[in-house]
Image (tube, rainbow, N blue to C red; front, side):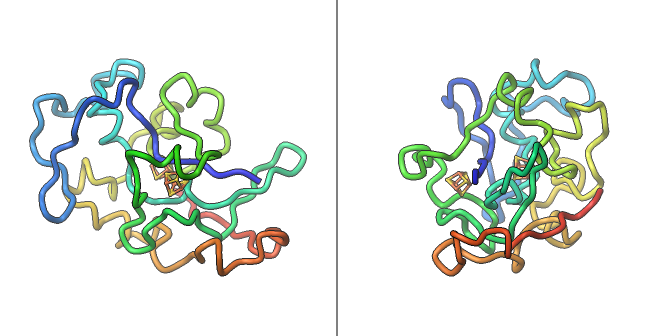
Length: 175
Ligand code: SF4
Ligand code: SF4
């Protein structure tokens, strides 16, 4: 059983500029169209963070079975089920010790069990961002409107039968 996390920038010493809706505002550390003009390795910390589409899928519990990764509808206890964001992002690793924080190096190890819709996985495999990605749609709501996120589709871990996670296996949305 394992869970993942939103990614992290290498030094964590930046702030993504967001408005009241959570949408990213112009930020000098985020170059226009960076995801098309630079590789993941070349992203600035702010660009690395901005790449996350906010689906929340990687914060679901997973089961590893003979090399296959199965997702469940059981969400980490720190996940906000409406925003699909971590409620204690800065200190998540202190609270949930098995939360996997990933940078580019770690991405190369875990890419195969991230969802196929995950923006990091897509860019890593040379695929474009999906049209519902906030960097293209200019709103964080589009990932929810497109039915990709886990909003309204998961249980908190204290309501699930953690010892029988196989009963909670789900199919993930396909891009
Ligand atoms: S601690 Fe936060 S980022 Fe990590 S799995 Fe839980 S909700 Fe996701
Ligand atoms: S795009 Fe979705 S699956 Fe990928 S890191 Fe962000 S929340 Fe997780």
